[in-house]
Image 1: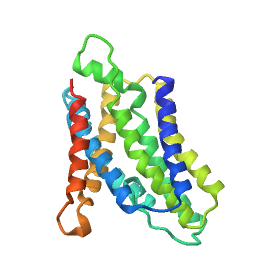
Image 2: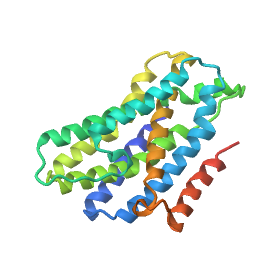
Image 3: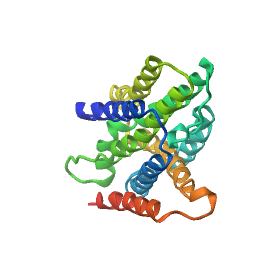
Length: 246
């Protein structure tokens, strides 16, 4: 991974959390619009790019890792309370254990997502046999896009739960560092294609869980109807993912 990619992962989270700290209020409509766009984009790149890369190589165990990623994410959300997809369930005067649970779930999730990042471009090129190096950043952009609303939700949640600014910033910085740390750890290892395929499949399972949860929650007041504005945003997210095809 290039240095700018590590920086992008950090800065996107810190800026989003900083904006949340400045406005100190939850604009549910704005968060839902942002979530709908990011969820649609993540679903699009998962289906159009990540899954074909994983399954076109004939990696026999990738399917099991995909299922594992889906259910690991289900378990992690028991700790994070759904902050990954914008849930903000504040607990006024919350005890330290509440923050610890949220951070444990979020940080494990972010660390796992970062694991295949350092080898993804080489993996993608090898599987698709381009014959030359490419700059494929679908996985990176997908991670960044869904971390932006997660960071926003995290800061609003901590402020509304009575934690200090210093505590909120420390937690945000730890969260921001987890995906770069995951990428850094695997960059020091020589992983073969089968291992990289399994790691990407693990993230694919997580992405499928997050994106579908976001889109299922996009209906207004659970009336099985999506507003025209949200529908337009969802189509825009899917459209952007399709524009990345080449």
